[in-house]
Image (tube, rainbow, N blue to C red):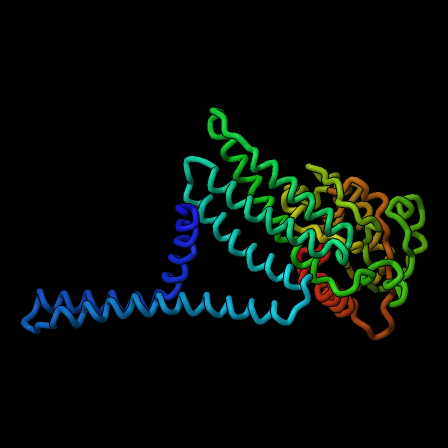
Length: 360
């Protein structure tokens, strides 16, 4: 009961404070009324400024209730019209945001223990298990594996213990919990994917992409097969299993910059079920051949200018990535073609970008 009340309070206070202007008007009127009563001969009846204060707080409370009611009614209307699978997805999405708020509030309060955090993760785990059961017949294996991985992490954190170690085990719990919530959040857009075959080899060939050679083959001489024309290119990992991530990047230090990013950032960027990891373009005079040579040289540790896509090289099997390209027709702008491909990918994968594309 106490935990439930605390959770409600953690949601209630930010919503009321969000209507700051209503509370502010009430407090301002009360202060002015009190000052006039003390400092001047103009006497304002106490009941008047007290009533304004109460009214301001009441308006803030009503607005908080109104927002919650709108979210509730939207959820009811959505689930009423949806299939059981869509209801499960929407239910998880709504519940996840609640658990996310509760987790952040609990973590930032710097509690003396981790029991409340474990209870929040327990609730999230139950919702994830329900989601897994609801979509197991329609979701791709990679997405189901991702959900199963998050569930294993949650179970491990539920068994986490604190030791007298200078706070290390305490910090480890909250850091691992943050990573679990990020990974759980990354599952949601993937569940909205419309076409499981989009942005795979067959679909790309159908729209004019050619090549489909591995990074290793390009390094061994197939780079000469790439045309010297402007165009767009894609990098694929034609596997559905989650990647093994490297703690340190083998890529080049271009202009002295370290290409390594933290593994948690890579995990958050991963798009379960997607084969395309990166979409690029070139308008250079030397064309696709020169640009792709920069790409593979950068991945091999040379300090050349292909900083975009650097996440690629912190995956263990990067030499087996498949590269395909499409030369731009006369008059076409590669930048526009790249933007169109990124928008299409985002539409198919619930607003996500390819793993190694950091901006549109």
